[in-house]
Length: 343
Image (cartoon, rainbow, N blue to C red):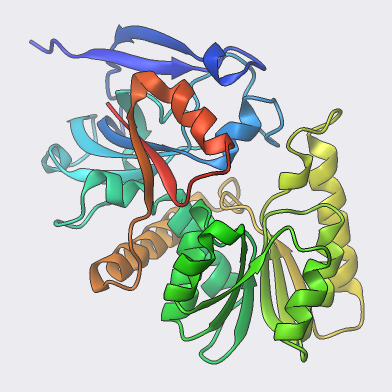
């Protein structure tokens, strides 16, 4: 008889972190093509920070269980799923629902975690690793010897992106607060204070002929500076709009404005390219292709971890019941890497 209980964190509305609620219930049952994952590690990403403010572009209506990704062991399989998948450690990208002790997922959406990689270590590389890998290799197509700029080089995505770029043989300029500069130098990154009065001018001093790629999660007016930093043939990859986190009004408008700017730049007669990266792009129209690409790319990231090209940057580990404290810590901007929640 299964005596396990479902424990999940609920985001009831636009609340401060202490407004998160803990809910108990029955463990879900796997339906056809599904698995139940017993969560071992989930994480706090920028998406949850946006969601609690109601600022994430396509978040579901309140209340809901946040949690963008998770790693855990398959507890049960549904009809049509290979029974031997039970007991396997897997990773899953879910967008919402990960902050729970047990999560129901389509079996086709799980990616096996190689032996020897711990749950918390793997968790730091699910959404962050897929995002970094696809931006670097599928969008910017960075090659050895090229120079790239990574904004927020100490953050969740940024710290993985820096390491993957260095492993690809690229020169990296990374923005971060001064307290993170020495750690970046140890990785072979040239650090720049993100609060510098004229950040773009400082970067141009380091790369007077332009850079081959800029990875920008900040958005806003600074995106124009990012575009202007590009050398001929360069690529701008925008993957967020952190400057609008506390803005009022429509949460769709900043993204639509950004998309319009990207479209305009690409329509101009120049050799530069711009993308707004969304890890979920293409899922609705080509789900099987999306799944195979996600599986292939996350497998590559895990392999990079095993080779030592990427390290798991765990900023802190807290119990799921302390998700409010974890969210506050993430929003403080004082940590490097990813905050991991354990059951």
